[in-house]
Image 1 (cartoon, helix red, strand yellow):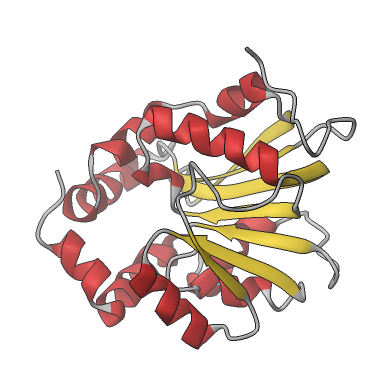
Image 2: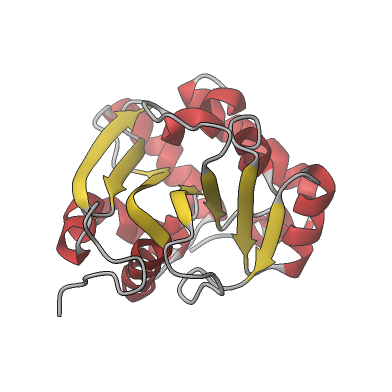
Length: 220
């Protein structure tokens, strides 16, 4: 799956940005899309925030409007160069989401925007474990990504978008239950909110407040 447009969208920032803006129209535009995962969250200026798989920093920039301590992590050096130019007030770290070069219990909030669908199921599980590790006790994980639409009218548009720009992992995410996955790994109070006729989901969950920062309690 996916077409020649996928590698082009990563190579040319203007194309990626145009695609993002077009896709975001389903929830009222890019500005609203970039803040969907922040709904109902209080983010004071001193909160330590991680933008996981930050790409070129589009959402990282939004996060710096809330917090003075924002870190972006991505595995792409090119994306991080673009992000640093766009968001000079943030800190950027090169690394894989499933093996973050970050200390235990470093962040109050971990945020991910339209990145989890890029991962194989076993990668996704490892990433969730890493998120639990780097969160402070009581910290929050929030993400926005694809979901199976409950409005059937939206299925052709979503299917076309996934066919043009995504791979099999995006289709697999439509069948996944992220709240169950997070709960099984030790997160508390996982919730899901749907937007855009159900084609986007915001999932939020907390690290237990009594968990150790150094050794997060994970199921065996």
